[in-house]
Image (spheres, rainbow, N blue to C red):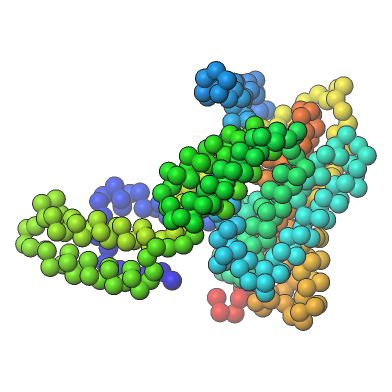
Amino acid sequence: MAIRNVITCGLEPIDQVLMPFQHFFKSKSTGGIILIISAVVALIWANSTWAASYFSLWETKFTVGYGELALSKPLLLWVNDGLMAMFFFVVGLEIKREFMVGELSTRRQAVLPIFAAIGGMVVPAGIYAIFNINGVGAHGWGIPMATDIAFALGILALLGDRVPYQLKIFLTAVAIVDDIGAVLVIALFYTSEIAGMMLLLAAALLVVAYIGNKAGIRTPVFYAIIGLIVWVAVLKSGVHSTVAGVLMAFTIPARTTCDAEAFTTNASNLLKEYESAITPGSSVLTNSTMHSALLSMQRIATRAQTPLQRLEHGMAPLVDYLIMPIFALANAGVALGGSMAGAVDTSMISVGVALGLFLGKPIGIVLAVILLVRISGGWPGGMTLRHFIGAGLLGGIGFTMSLFIAALAFEDQAMLNAAKASILAASTLAGVAGYLVLKSLPLPEDS
């Protein structure tokens, strides 16, 4: 619960100017808006007179390290293998939090979104397979399975109070389960040959991080160093390196070292100490007692939080406003209308991806919900079938994860371009359709 009626400290003129921008960047729809802008920029750039510079940029080799320890990859792979590992790390933190205290923490809460997410993964993959099971695009069955939560929640935010809060929670939980499924699919089905020693090294380091967690090590530097080595080991093992991000997230401590009672007592005592040290004309720069009390309050406030909370809160803006837009800029550029002479037939890839996302997602999610509603005997939270149809359509916004899996599935550029174009088209249609369905619902009586 938010603390209200707090006396605010004086704002500088620059703070007053920047406040609207700060509120903008805190809104739920911002991440989706920035992703859209990045994707549009990539599409325009890739189909402009400067298209050659777009494609050559992401093919530019970038080397880190020296000699045998050097990693040399095109810039596109640094984005997809490196930056996206940080994205998956934050996803892992969200998954861990949801299972510990969130919407997946109890069986009753978890059943509906888990079954809906499974339906929303199986049906799209099945639809894709119907069109491609014996074709050149058979390996792309995982592409239409994912949901882009940033876009989906961004659209829900635009609908405001017309959408019940329970539906937002449901869609978030579905997307979290979707992410778990995507990670498993990537690890099990989009992995090259396995280098056993590297995999064993990664596993050993994860055990070290887990032991550090249990031993009470809470400094982010410890986990950052181990995480970097785990990422390199997983990258060298043949398993996709982004899996390292999720696995490392599970080792991050989720316990406080200062419970609520101890925090309240200590904070009260420190506030009294700070207040008693105040003298007319005094400044924290010259009053050592005030300064000491402030530092002590900062320490106990940090100990009252969990490292998982601090990392998730601190890294989410980096992921939402930098990493994902860079990923979209690097991956959404598709040369439209180019000559396909001599290329493989990609029509079934396009059909499979488009129908999987636009039809398969809502059909799978809604059928799973209807089945559970019939078993349980009522719609949850006062919601109706139309609410879940709208949510199912928003689940068809694949974008980030779908583009990511497409890049893993296809090395052939024509096949990859066909998949990307269908992802962008189907995600746009699903987003618009989901918005219109939910927009047509009557406002709640208490709004």
